[in-house]
Length: 311
Image (cartoon, rainbow, N blue to C red):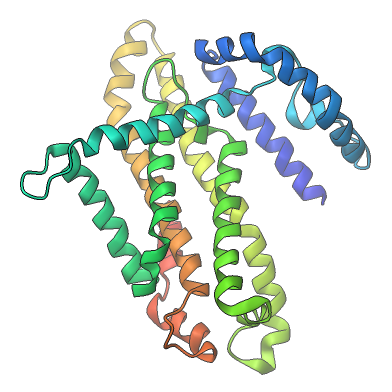
């Protein structure tokens, strides 16, 4: 439990560093100006006493983990930015699709089709033909994470994925979803049996290793995404301060292609790993359950290690 607290503290330090590296966007200040006071009152009345009681058991305080409570920071910048990312994702898809046409598709529609076909092909190759039913959740991850990653490249915005609170939430969502799929398709006992591996006489050793490995996945997904996006923003901020005002405008523009590349790569790695996790628990109807473990190993040898190496 102590390592979870240390992770939370490290996450808070990362979020403080991200906020100090950039001036808080004016839209965040406006949101807290109008809604910060009632949110702060709700926090102090309901959530703060619970957190205070919980963290007291570990000789720490909510302020040490989450930062100071005040009406000016009641709604964190990453929460505001993530809500904006959700709105932008829906708006951009609506703009890109335009007037759908099979005979004369516009540039926006063609761009969306390329992305849709790429994700559909990945699902078919990694999960199998039955993986297409998971397309909505995987595509939602792809669009939302990509938009969030790219937001930091534009004035008045910050990348919500530069905060561990957001990336951990995304990682936890992926974790809960693929476990839900595993239980829905195989039942609770079947899902637990999958964690024990295909060889019964060493299942007592494989099971605890697989349980620990699965519990670590949401943290590894979150830390990987946060680390790369936060590092990219820190590099841009450091370079911009070398010789102002020249470096404040010229060098960040030159580094922008690298930022775009990182945004796309980290989006790809996140959805690739999520699909690999789905492939472990989802199987075609004709497959026998006792062949699941061996089939996954044969289909994707070393694919997860390659994804980790790319990230």
